[in-house]
Amino acid sequence: MRILFCGDTFPEGPEYLRQRLPVDAHDELIVCPAPDICRMLDGVDVVIPKMQRVGRREMELGTFRLVQQWGAGLEGVDIEAAREKGVHVANVPATGGNAESVAEHALLLMLALLRDLPKAQANVRTGVLGAPIGKMLMGRTVCIYGLGAIALPLAKRLQTFGVRLIGITHDPSSPKVADFGLDHCFAISNRDQAFTETDILVLSMRYSEEMRGTIGAHELGGLRSGAYLINIARGGLLDNNALYDALRRGQLAGAGLDVFWQEPLPVNDPILTLPNVIATPHIAGVTEESFIDIADAVAANIERLRKGLSLLNQVV
Image: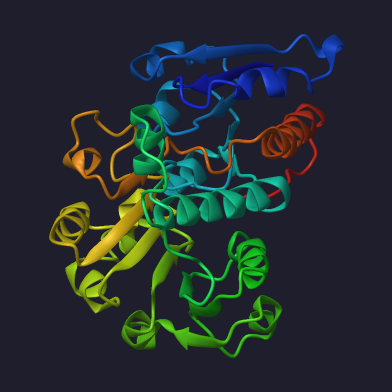
C-alpha cells in the first residue's frame, strides 16, 4: 500500500509507523510538504493528514480509501465529502499513552507558570540567586473545562497536589463524573459561576468549528483576577485577541499554550512577546509512549483495510 503523510509536522510519526507495518507487505510511506498534497495523491491508498486539511478537492483528485488521523482530532477532514465519496475516515482516541502524556504536559505548564520558569532560567544565566518568588499549586482552585479522556488522568494527578478541583461538562449528573473526584461540577450553562471560583482554567474539551472562540473576553473577564489559563485542547477555542488583551492588562497572570489559533504559530505573533506566556509547539501528546500507542492503532487499521475487515474507530 502507498501511505501518504501530509505535511512535515510531527516528523517522528512515519518512522514509528514503519516499524509496525509487516516487512513483507512492502508498504510505501511517503511524506510530502503541505503544498504538494494534491499532486502526490496518485496511487495513494491511505492518507494521514496530521495537521493538514483533507477536503472535497483532495478526495476528488485521489483514489485513496482511508483517511486515518494520527490522533483524535478530525476537524481538518471533510466528513460529508468523505461520506459522499465512499472514503473511510478513522481516528485514534485520545486514551492510553496519549491522554496520560497530555495530562502530564498540562501539569508542566501549570507549574512552569506558577514558578515563573522563564525568569528563573534567565536568573541562572545572570547569576541571580533566590528569585523569582513563585506560587504554590496547592490550595488553588483548578477548573477542568471538558471531562473527557484527557481530563481524567489530569484530575487524578491534580488531587495529589492538594488543589480544590472543579469541572465543567454538559451533564454534571452523568455517572462518569464521580470518577473525577471533583469538589464541584458545573453544567456548561452555569460555567460563569465556575469561572468566578477559578484560579487555573484548563481547556480540555472536544473541538468543533461551532466552538471557535468559545473562550473570549467575557469568559476571561469572569475568571478570578490573576488567574491562569492552560490550553491543551485546540487553539480555535480561544479568541486570540481577547487572550492577548487579558494577558497584557494583567487580568490573567499567565497562559500556558500548547495549541494555537494558527498552526504552526507565526514566529511574529504578538502572543509570543508577552513575558507571562509559556508556549510549546503542540507537543503535549508527543511522547514515546503516546506515539507507540498511536502507531499501533494506525498500523492495525492499515492491516484491516488490506484484509477487507471493518476498521477500528471508524467515523465514516
